[in-house]
Image (tube, rainbow, N blue to C red; front, side, top):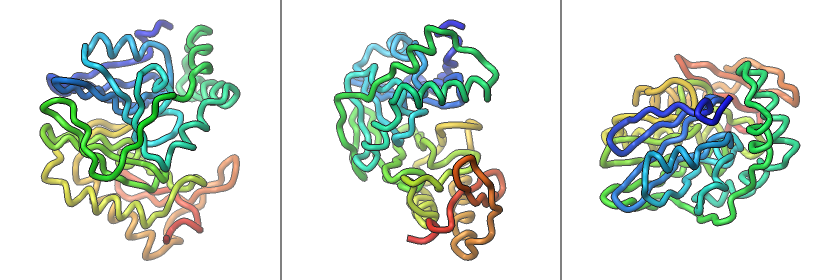
Length: 272
């Protein structure tokens, strides 16, 4: 398997690209007249830096939706990484060689692929990015006649964010809004109540959103899915026992399914 097999590129408009990696994670290249942003950095398979150079000649910074390893893997290949301070520790935890080898073996079984020895070594050798800059609520990242507005959406992780391109109508949502379940049962997750609050915050911006660009699963997804998350969270808050118990290798989660989405949570992280 060669590096060109690791990514699929879909051009969304003249200056925006979706890059899907082999393991169902989406990255987005967002280009302005002066610079570009790579929103999320995927699992860390080889070839993303070279691919990005083919798409833009602007200087590129990485903007991370959150600190999970499947979104941060290739960040070290770029000169600057932007992340919410609350997820800095989580970012650093995803780069032990042993844990990355385990995750890659798991992905290869799940997706029934073999990446090859060179890619395996590259993946396991990924490092935390060194030049980190913190982002915060309502900060605007200026790209040159194009900007991204940072929206804090803690729930999946404490430092989860979305980025809104108001000029073009793109909401880059990471794992906050996907057409599947949002996982809110990790030790570094927050509360189901935060899922509802994040949904309400995004709902207030719906007139500016034409396309939701998620971190995984179906694309595109309707803007109305934001309302589904609000309602699903409200249902859990009204009755925390509404979900079904799911045993995990370590512990459990409670999954409440609603229409095409779901929320996975624990008994102790429903209310703030």
